[in-house]
Length: 111
Image 1 (cartoon, helix red, strand yellow):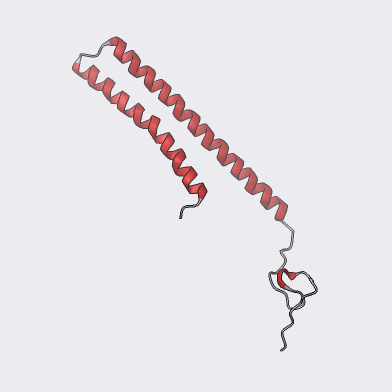
Image 2 (tube, rainbow, N blue to C red; image 1 turned 90 degrees about the vertical axis):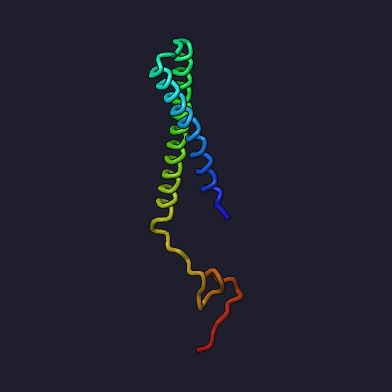
């Protein structure tokens, strides 16, 4: 089963791929029209407007990805900063019960 983060990344990458594919398709259509000499200036103008719009959409997605990465890096740095120098309690202690805390139910093993 995928973790939610990888599914989220795949969705964002798919969303980014859509405008990039549209940009390529429109650019190729414009090239074909120019090469054949049959391109209508209004049609070319519409194609270029679509390319600009798709580029702006892709740029917004990249900005969202960048912001998400910065937030993740900041959260990881904060978590690391908060845990540096804090000793981890052992999961098991001979003198103390589970979790290393004296819960009054200590289990002692004979040697």
